[in-house]
Length: 213
Image (cartoon, rainbow, N blue to C red; front, top):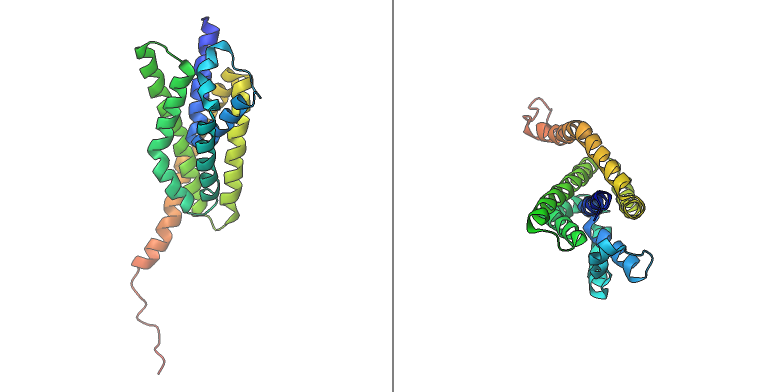
């Protein structure tokens, strides 16, 4: 395998891991459908991904995605769902990356699993933080808009990974940089919005309010 093919392989592995950090079930479901119905043709080095085209895997991923589709659009339910998936998404992303590699050396498998798990965790953290900020916003439509935007991003990301894995990886790295740049502002905004009601609750009651007879 040439160095270019190795780079493509690593880019696909980390690309799928990143998308799994945003929506694991949609990533598996959409990839499985594309493989099952031959919408994409797997190159020889990616034949290990053919298992995702299994009918059972597609069905289970589809049901779980349907649950996430509705949970993601309900304020605070989406944050609870994200909290539950804090462990699930990184593990799923690591498993997807390992599946992309096929049967490499044990040492390389461990290295890629760690990189993929970290990649999924970063993507998951970005999503969860954005949703938490959305839930403190007075606009109820924000959750629905974010949910559709995330699904579109996953589908677009899968298309890009298929067309140009390295470009997909570069875009993801840029997205990570942008997230960390704005992370402090988002966290301060969340803390400020949550802290204001709490401060009001802790303030002593106004004893000068006149009492009606």
